[in-house]
Amino acid sequence: MRKKLLLLLILVLMILHACGGPEPELQESPEGDAATESGSGNLTWASGAQGGGWYSMAGGISSLIQENNSDINIRTIPGGSMQNMPFISNNEAQLAWMQPPFIIAGLDGEEPFEEPHDNVSTIGNGFGTNHFHFIVGEDTGIESIDEIFDNEMGVNIAVTPVNNSDEWVFRRFLEYYDVTYEDIESWGGSIFHNSYQEQVDAFSNGNVDVIFTQLAIPASSVTEAGVSRDMRILPMDEDMMEYLTDFGLEINEIPADTYPEAVNGDEAIPTASMGNVLTVNSEVDEETVYEITKIINENVERLPNIHSSLNDYDVDNAVDNLLTDLHPGAERYYQEIGILD
Image (cartoon, rainbow, N blue to C red):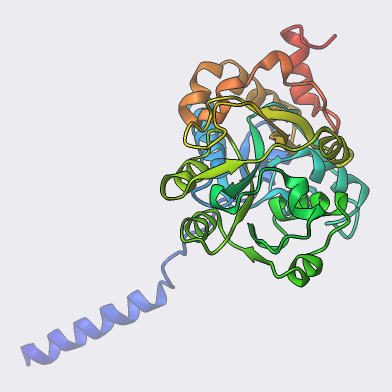
């Protein structure tokens, strides 16, 4: 009898528990609705590939912001130069790293974008610079970029996958020489679309002769490429760099001794570059953007600990060469410290 009563009691308890409904599901943080309506909230920051510089920079700066203002919570997601403009414009992300060529193309709705994107404002410029590296194996005997295209050399070239910023610039680069991928293949060469690490591996193994890449200097993958194979970093000529400025790139150089392992590492190497711009959805409220701008610029000494490419960030240059309007919150901060009238 006792066993029957015990079984009945267990059955009743099970029924009561079931009537209580399912356990609540864990919810992801909202993607910024609160921040577009009030002075605080949850934001999403579109960065770059996981493990890359943009991703670690966004994560580190987000932690710095939350440390100084616990009302602002920022979630970092992967992205890229081409993906981040639509993310910001559609409010799928409220913050994003971008680069000038893709800001220009995104606002105008030009390639690689199919339509114009708006609602994009700027917090600041100068968050590191990526230099383009045109690397050749020393055993190829190639000493200039013109030599490859003028002589229609059949070289194997490694670049990032299609619809990536490096690859987009590389096609602009080829346009200057009036050359296509098909031309290179007809000369007996080939194009390998690989990740940075795969590029290094292919170069080290002799499967590619050339790497075309943009990275903050000194780039660890470039250093690694020169460990197992002698390399030369070829300079871009002035006309080439002037051509690329039409697309928002800048004329720059890789300083001498940046890569002592390169055959010409003791020379300054002229090349194009692209800076990193911190953008924000225009509808994020003024107070939130003001706080973000203030925290970043009042903790400049901590930025290099987040990423070495932030070592040269200077608040005095944060409003230079902007391609979009400053967000009102950022503008208010820069006015307070006397950078803007």
